[in-house]
Length: 362
Image 1: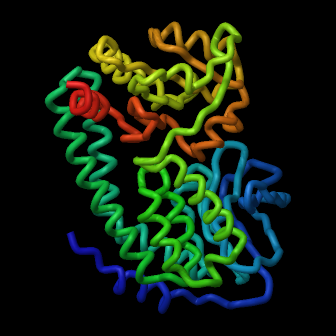
Image 2: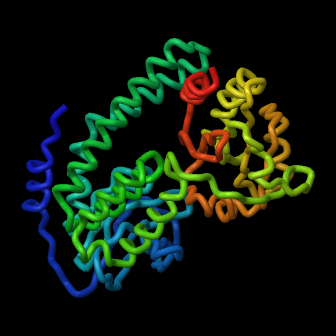
């Protein structure tokens, strides 16, 4: 599959009529918008910066200035509009019942992102259809079909990464690259992402967002395959302290991050249970780390999903100290640790966990 990045991005830049100023003005005209207030928010390091604007007859306006383009969100009560904000006159036009189809003009960075998205669509459309097929196969308990779909998703994932890397190499001065690298942190490797980051222009790397990403990449290094697992202690469902170093005791352990409110996690739990039942007599255990805040909901989910292994949590949600120690930004997430305490695989989903365990335990 050949992706014409030069053509798409060249057209985007030539066709964008941007008036560059020393500040930004975002003018919105969303027909049918009933909210009286909308918000403009962006992430700056670990903090969220938020501004508000009054809505009159679906119209609103934000003004301010930025040191460099940044990904932001306009949020309503029900939905949000993501786009790249920069010092320019930007217009957002559309309908309240279809905010995913709004027209955004005036931002050259957003025009470049739109072109990248369009060039990736042949891949993303296939990925979406395969996820639909996966759900149907899973519902039908068709393991053969599941394996075929997983293999297809893996190959499409490779294509997606190749396309993203090509964009980053071609546009090292674009702030979009920071967000593209960030999107790859779930399944990408530290050496690869560090190399991509180091290839960016100095101005981009030294920006606030660049420095934040650099710190996160340093955390990623801790969880890389081949790294020694870090020790921690948290309480189980009975309030008893569980120290990871004592729990593993020379066994293979799946360190599994999940939460009762996470749909994909709950859908994945049967796969973990199946692997556990198959290999529990062969020196394999699971330790669940919940990103819950409500102890009752956490307990109910453990019982309902029939998970017999030990579960721990500090009930701090996304602020869970263990998840922050490992830089967990999306769940489900997991690490397979061998008898010496070394991470040998991560984010094993579907049948991948059983395959890996069969490889190392049989």
